[in-house]
Image 1 (tube, rainbow, N blue to C red):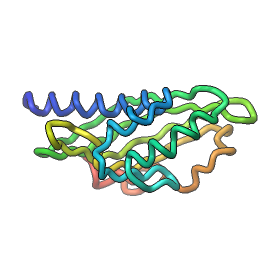
Image 2: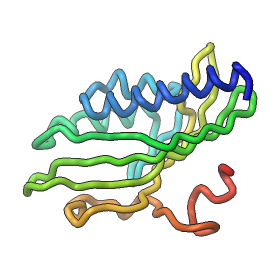
Image 3: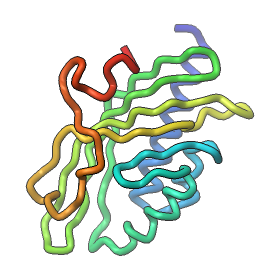
Image 4: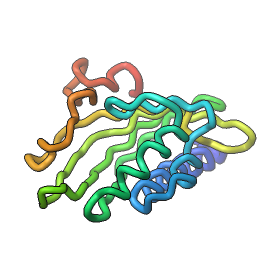
Length: 159
């Protein structure tokens, strides 16, 4: 690992943190700042650009009865020049209309690219690993599920 790798990883982590903070604070501009303009976001049933995802998500978060939280851990970055494959584990909680909280754990499988001196998400796929019984009111059926070894969506993509 050289200094360029360290700088890239720090920049990538900061973009991931901006995304999470933007979601939790309902800040569409901050969410979109983590993505390149032509980025692909695959978030369950949603498929579109990062900006479109921010525009879709903020009203939904505003309608939630309470603020939720997104926390990232175990960020693995594999950089190859101006591209990087990144796997980030997340824990998220969401207030439910009927009371209680839904807890979801999963991973962001991201491809970051460096353009104009900025590392941003070029492509994101969200994988769900586990969820709480309260999430039954949330439709998670369009999300790929995590597995072990070859059964996991990240198999062969990141090592």
